[in-house]
Image (cartoon, rainbow, N blue to C red; front, side, top):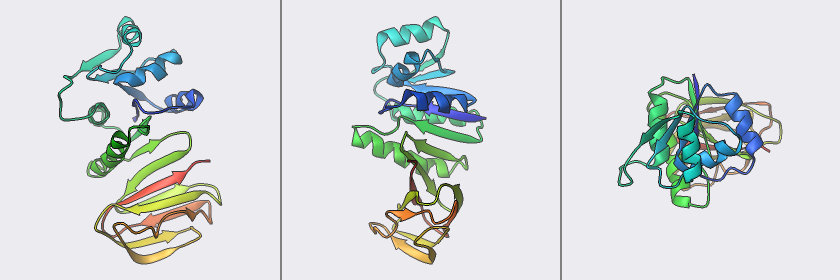
Length: 211
């Protein structure tokens, strides 16, 4: 099962949202992100959160259409996005995609990106996407398909990411250690339509330009 989590960041292209929903088996909406779905006359399988940011009319529409709603207190230990991902994991998915995770609140945006590190431990592939960007984390190996000339950046999230090997990129690496804070992996380029990234130890944030 492919699960889509729609959260309350910035989604500029509703057609893109519609396409992603069409490729998903189950949709979880985090609180105020309901505004994006109701504008498309689409209703999720689950609405989750403290419901402090959802428009009352959107909430009414959800209830009128018998959407399952899991409400939490405002004072809680998880963000609405993390709660939504926790519910997604209960479905034993083959993959989780998070849309709307990036926005004007940098604390929330960075917190959502760091949730990808938590997901690594579950073994379930998880990525954050918007109209322009795809973000994921690799701790072992990942293979990517793209177009020659696509931009990709690799950012270490450990004190030292060890033995990084990059194949199919303009600037390849072979068993290279990358230290936390290094800009070595910024703005690499697809030299092939197939790219392989291998990591021996540590976490590597992978940010792809989808344009």
